Amino acid sequence: MRNEKTATAYVVATKDRPAELGRLLRSLEAQTRLPDEILVVDGGRESVEALCRGVRAFPVRHMRCLPPSAARQRNAGLEAASPEARLIGFLDDDVVLDEHAVENMIRFWESADERTGGAAFNMMNHPSTALAGIKLSPFSEAAGLYSRRRGAVSPAGFQTMIGRVGANDSFDWLPSTASVWRRDVFAGFRFDEWYAGYSYLEDLDFSYRVGKRFRLAVVADAGYLHLPAASGRGNGFEFGRREIVNRIHFVRKNPELSIPRCYMAMAVRLLMSLGLGLRRRDSYHLQRAWGNVVGLGLSLGRIGRAA
Image (cartoon, rainbow, N blue to C red):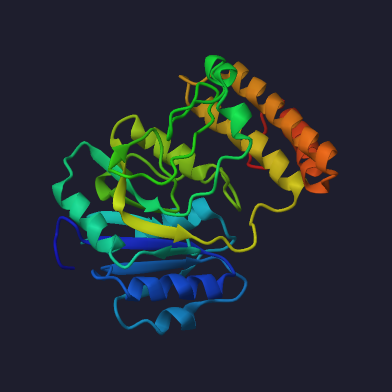
């Protein structure tokens, strides 16, 4: 690997998305600075090993990890990364990097001090905040349910979206969609494999804990697009249950956050889903509201596994 300080291994957790993975690998092949190593951790029914073997521009290692879990796959990838890699990156299989993104990310790390633990690429096509009028209201902030500050984590345990940044900035948490971390961070932190399957909120859980000890940044000129395929969230009921149980698990792990405020926020979330479902006659949001009810019941019973 080229520069000992900035040699980077990127872990790509994938599951049954060969078209998206191929698109990501092509965007990496087009970089002005090629990655040092890619580890494709495959949890799909059909192996993508042949697709990985077709890449010649940089080393690609294919690993199988079953049963699939985004958190477990990322942990497996970082454990397998070359010992020369001083930085470990994570890329979702449905992202496309700007051709200068890797080069600009490495330039950031070349000047970063030891207080910096992680840095995210800059999402250039971030969607608008759903139900922003409620989430960003003075009441929500005063009650500690949400925050009007981007990249914050509220006392209720809800993260605000970062969006597209115009200059390098620091935040309370980072999405794992496209990010790079100092390898030393992993001596004390891992993705929590309690978050099974789709692993909803595993990136909030990981990055927020790291952010208590290290600076977390977004690199403005390291751009990428997030082009999601069909949702991995499951149906409305499954996601509604998961969003409650996983959120409560996250808040319970961090004592500075508030369980009562989290339950209050989840009750508001339930009412929002119910209202949308009734107003739009939308079965997905009605299912999501019912999943919220079940999730609240499960969380009150302090279940021991992700929904």
